[in-house]
Image (cartoon, rainbow over all chains, first blue to last red; front, side, top):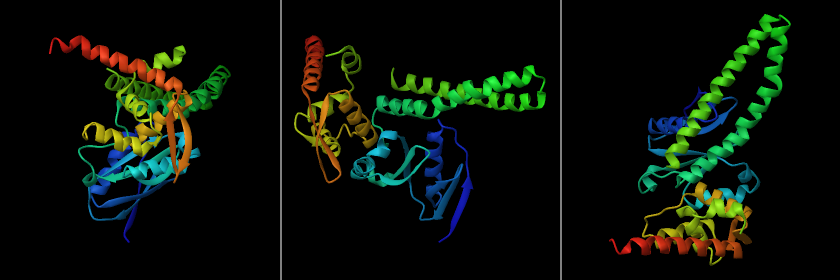
Length: 178
Length: 104
């Protein structure tokens, strides 16, 4: 069996891009096997097919795993793996009537986004304000500029990600709650 | 009915309404999906992520309760609070329809 690995990095809110990426690979004849590490995607050769990939973020589901996966299986979604809080599913487009996803209304899609915010953004925000920011200020005022500029770089990256996430969330909110 | 319930469920989403409506009879998530598909002539197909999220939220908020498990499927039914919310929603929809019927 021919296989390949690809490295891709998606930030926490880019699951839609990730879904599209996996779907495109499957259309090109590369079937998703698993994702490991910090973004190593494993594929194996297959007959090209249009298969829809979907990611759910639900901590509660990890506790009621069997029941959760049964519901998805009943609706025709194949379970692939759990990774970093996300659960991966796929379903061939040929088994759907029209475009189908694991969310059928805006409110539940938005609810998932809020779970991502609480589960992933909040810890980052705590780390940001409790560790990085004070360290940056201490190092800067003590004249340790090399350390300070290193920390400053990380802080900038954080601000960049936060802003991106914030904008994306507001956009979705507008889209789903007119 | 407390302020939280009123704020979140009155008025409620179409998904929420159909779930409560179906759970007047004990049923599991996929059973509700099938019932709603039949009721709406295939117009509304509830997706599993939506269904799972709604059921856990409604159970937490006391609108439905867990009855038993059958073959890894949780069976739920509506509670008194859920019935109260459903009645309010039915009244709202009826009023909505009645008020515009003359104009149609």
